[in-house]
Length: 339
Image 1 (cartoon, rainbow, N blue to C red):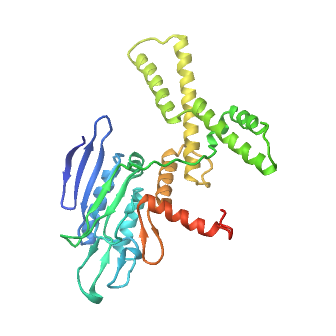
Image 2 (cartoon, rainbow, N blue to C red; image 1 turned 60 degrees about the vertical axis):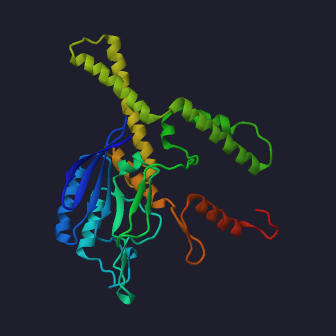
Image 3 (tube, rainbow, N blue to C red; image 1 turned 180 degrees about the vertical axis):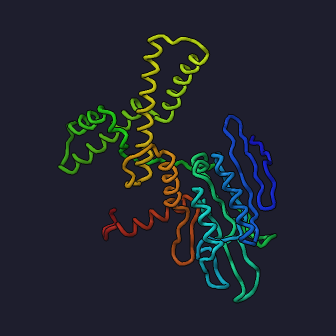
């Protein structure tokens, strides 16, 4: 059971600290932004200060501002005004990600008639990259407008669906000389079939052996970093308390420090590959930068809904899967019905 503690209650926001058993806390910020963009600047400054604390943060509510032309229908034509640019700059400067949505696109309507009727998406959920890492299975739903001119936002941090990541060669494996032996042995295995069948079977065999080798030898580098740091902290703590380390202890400490350095390089390589940013060649470890870039790219690439036919949209995960399957089957089925 989670507990909610109100940390700050201001005119434009309510900041709450969410604590769950055996989990680090995170911050939920409910926003009701002013209609005056000059007053909203105060909100952007306060949220920037909050986000600088480095705690996973979700900001949700009525921002009273849209980001792009797609966020509006009806009324005057969209213009890239100062307040909209400031909103985008605030999100970009703090590395915030729009969590998207399912359901109706627009969250507010002025309830006027005819040409005067306007719809806008001024309510949204945005989050820091570390919050998305904490709750990767989140879902944001726009519910029906009933008792208000705004629609409620329902946010779930859990999902019953299970996603299996496809096999990808990890560049960090190249830092292990054994990886070459794993590939060489798998590729030299005797297989039957024509040329293409032999290539396909060797690729499958290589994939299985690399997966097993990664699980048994490389392991979870993030957990290994934590374990090595615990060993280093223990040794340094003993020294700090006045205990003299033996030569064997000092040798273990040096090995742990070298191992930690190697693991950090592997972690950087891991996130560099995931971020797909090729222009960064050298420099200090930019693991946080690579990680945030990866999180943002994944959110942008995630398919949450599809338009099927004219004016029909599917959003439920199973329906999206069937729509994709039917689309490609219709294009790759030959006249004989074999695909």
